[in-house]
Image (cartoon, rainbow, N blue to C red):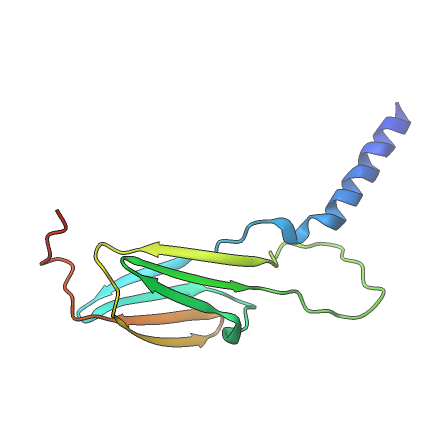
Length: 128
């Protein structure tokens, strides 16, 4: 009995070493409607702003990138990992087309802030 329990814990330890970066990361986002378009705020702590890809297509905004772990030196063995380090993709849908919207981008304190300015008014347009 004790051999099977030990084997179980050894298997857990091996799996823990392999899986930390395998989790799917989907950053949280807030979307605000403004008088001249939209403001999108995405929680991207630890992501290099230069590594971000932003795509606007129709009614969809897609943000892609990767949060990487920093290499601290040889001989380091993790004790606890809760932060997800991996590629991510965040897709947001809007009630009307955002094609052609001008895009102002700011990245501060771990938040990507996008201001999409558009001539189009979603409320007055019938998508029907």
